[in-house]
Length: 239
Image 1 (cartoon, helix red, strand yellow):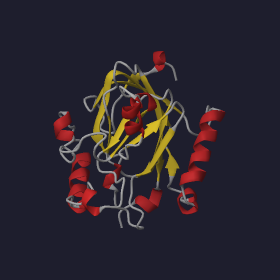
Image 2 (cartoon, helix red, strand yellow; image 1 turned 135 degrees about the horizontal axis):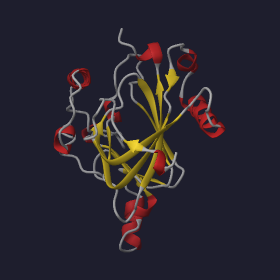
Image 3 (cartoon, one colour; image 1 turned 45 degrees about the horizontal axis):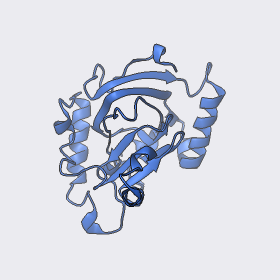
Image 4 (cartoon, one colour; image 1 turned 45 degrees about the vertical axis):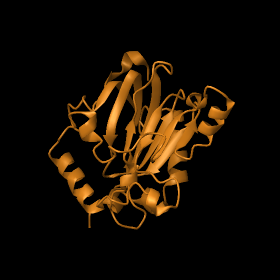
């Protein structure tokens, strides 16, 4: 994928270009004729590493084409859940630029620090599915982030960001940043994998997988990422 062969990125809601800003997209086939050896090998290695035999053998399971995204400075994607039937998301940080924030992720065992402790999972699921069915598009960041409106990146949840952001005004500040339990630092070529469903055998969405692409900063420049979505087939279908 090259910048000259990219289109304005939309979401699963057809025509929605407001949830993403300053973002272009291209697609590379993950299988079949025309699939590159690199994409095919990447897909197979990822599936073998993160998916069970039950999922891989499900005739209704599969993988979507590789999505390649280019975020210009200021580009962002509001808080969202990748949703059914995507059981696994894998993000590839192609040039090491990025800030992906999971406001409801846990980084410790203290129940008092659990961002999900006051969230009713059934109500959240119902609201999410209703939004999907009615093709409701978040009108602004505040509306999309009402679940985590009191949280701050780097202080609550988990922030995945470029290692360049760890450099502080002095050595002490840099070490403090590197040891922050709410930040995971990435380099060029790193990947991030997360499951969108609970691991209790039920087809229930895991709300800790809510995430947002924070605005790309001028000091970092253009962000290039790609992602694979693996579908769970019958294992993610409501009973």
